[in-house]
Length: 176
Image (cartoon, rainbow, N blue to C red):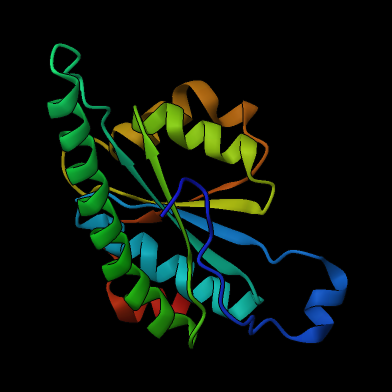
């Protein structure tokens, strides 16, 4: 898998919707290891299904900072990428089930999550909505949401949907 290479399948977007826009709206979800990510994933999948859109899944892996031994750095990078691909495939199965068969677009980027996310949004015009779920703990909504709200939100070219991270599946189903 290469950066920003979508896994394409036959589109299930109704022809009337396709006539309106040449590309379906992509609801982007940042895949991390937080429990609230599952809430964002479900919300984005059901919204995409309802609106004829698609889901995009972004996984950011840290750059291997092992410059002294290039072979070890390359091995670390390859292992991180393999883990990212496996994780994305697991979540892609969930998206495919929730959307009724639509395979999500998978993105893997290297670097800092905040920078990689902003770069991807700037590069890919299909991405029309960023869906995040807020953490439910006392420490706030999460570092990515905090960063976006404090410094970036007014500069983004797309809307951000923040879903409460404590919603149940039934509550999400009702909202979408």
